[in-house]
Length: 264
Image 1: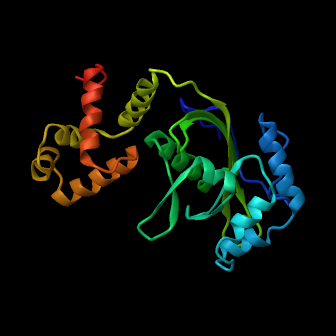
Image 2: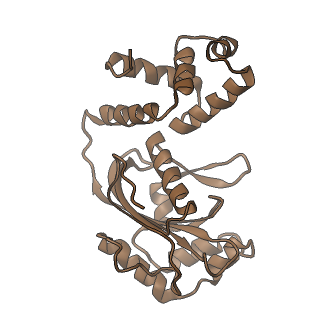
Image 3: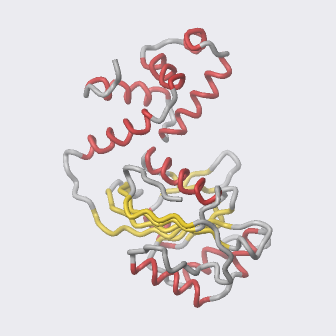
């Protein structure tokens, strides 16, 4: 099972396999990042999965996993989440490179600086939840401070054979600071164009209706859906791009049109 997305390279996806070591990589995993490989070795040698298991089963004190990860002095930023994508803990380095926000349920979640970063994170998590055991990929994305980096990221399932639930382990580190160039807005626009093309025809028509100022009722009549359906789909469109307001959809379509990127 191999993924090929334009923002990835050197991607390796490995299907589940019974193993006694949750941090063990199979020999055919083409992991080219020696720093992350070293971090996995540290996790393997620490050999203590109790804190992971307790967090998954809601038996750990607040901050216990964060303290455990910090004590290991890993070089990568580390996130651990449940198989429901609920964040369990992260290390100090992850806090330096990422901003966080409160979800509707009051849980802390990473606040992705770009919609493409959010989409990539969700897509790779879904691959793990769908049966893949290990993913490694490189991609370009901004950190919380706005600087763009090339990142090396490893994701894998942990505890899948030792607990009723398993958790997702994410190790990521910046391998190159990308230059601040005038082309940065173009890079963002190209990413958003890819995401816009991922929308189905109905969602694109909803975006177009929003852009020309149509009301929810007018958009509903145009696409043959109820007003409630339009509201739900509009919310999912905002989430897809990492937007918080409708005006951001308007601005996106204006920029796409100005650059000749919207279909006739």
